[in-house]
Length: 156
Image (cartoon, rainbow, N blue to C red; front, side):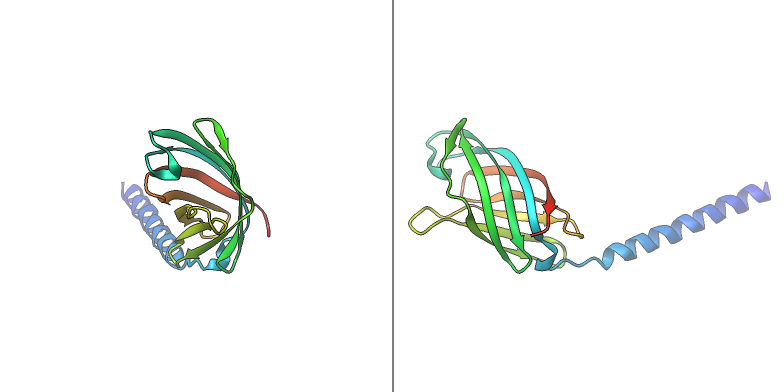
């Protein structure tokens, strides 16, 4: 019986040390703009509420393409966008800017050509090694879309 108790206590102690080590390891993870660098595929769908992208009634949207992040807070977006199944012409590439905090969260904004309506903005969440990211629309008002994790498929 004493051996069983000693064995259980020993396993508990090892598990505790392992958990403390894992927690400390995650605490050391820090992202910078350089974490997000390369080509990332994306795709997703969402709902548009007026006045997003000029719709006058609730509509379904979808988008697919890729981002190229330069590791310095800039990059380009290549995208195909549809509203209610109709392709909406989007010039590609469009410039983008992004921020990324040490906690691996940030934002990016697509900059449409001069004279066009402002481009969309997103909150982003990036894996600590930069291999994946996900995003959710924050602008324009009425755009409700989230994108499944985007994988880095190539260095820049």
